[in-house]
Length: 157
Image 1 (cartoon, helix red, strand yellow):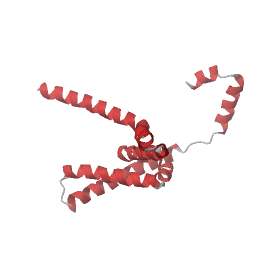
Image 2 (cartoon, helix red, strand yellow):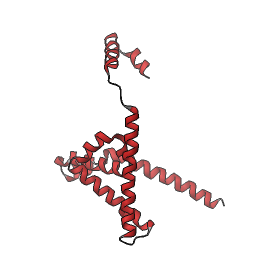
Image 3 (cartoon, rainbow, N blue to C red):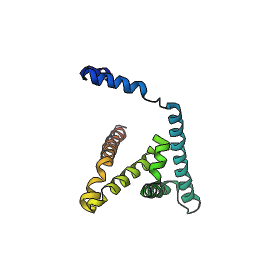
Image 4 (cartoon, rainbow, N blue to C red):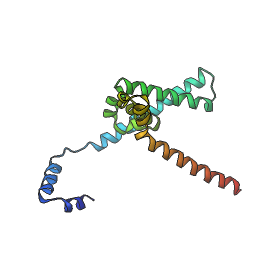
């Protein structure tokens, strides 16, 4: 793909791309992998600790504790995004913060904050699903097909 772009580029553009590529700093790939793995794991450990709190302190069953656990993680992420702490953390942690619940909450709150000056309906409500909308659609479509496959397997027994 990169070679195709070089073929379409003018000679000046090709020289500039080679110049820029030669001076681009190397990315610390192993460090990024390790930090993302650890941070994602720590977020999951936090979620498990919250769920254990609901089970052992408030008397929820494991199944009943799942929804409030997700709600607490969403609220914590939304709060951290609102005060600007999540973005700083995400810059350092990288992909580790993209654990589905926290990444989704951050994308929703970030979009809502960005468009709040345009009003609640046309700004916040109209734009907060721009990034998260594809996630919601993919989730609904994949859940439909998984449900369909499961139903067909149960009927086939």
